[in-house]
Image (tube, rainbow, N blue to C red):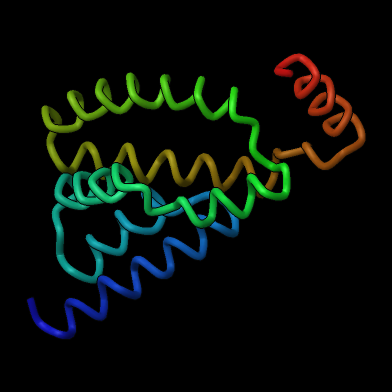
Length: 141
């Protein structure tokens, strides 16, 4: 591995770590596109590598910060983790069977829809949204 590749990988990791700790994203939104654009990984190689990174407890320090401040509901984490485990298995079965071009399109459409929703349709900061969020939190606990 060249020093340039090593430095690019470190920068990708730092960027993903910062954004993960800051806004809760990293793997799919940062690591996958960065590996594809900067290191010419195929979409499947980038996705597999991102999943490999997630298997390690790389976010433990960020999690500890949020947990210490009371921003993590362990019950929710465990429930979503079980779903993620099942969904990750199902998604990986589909991904390795699909052509790379199809996966890239699915990924791009998902990111576009998410961005448009967040920019124009997300009303969660309104009073009604805050009330709904508070009610949901009570239901979870």
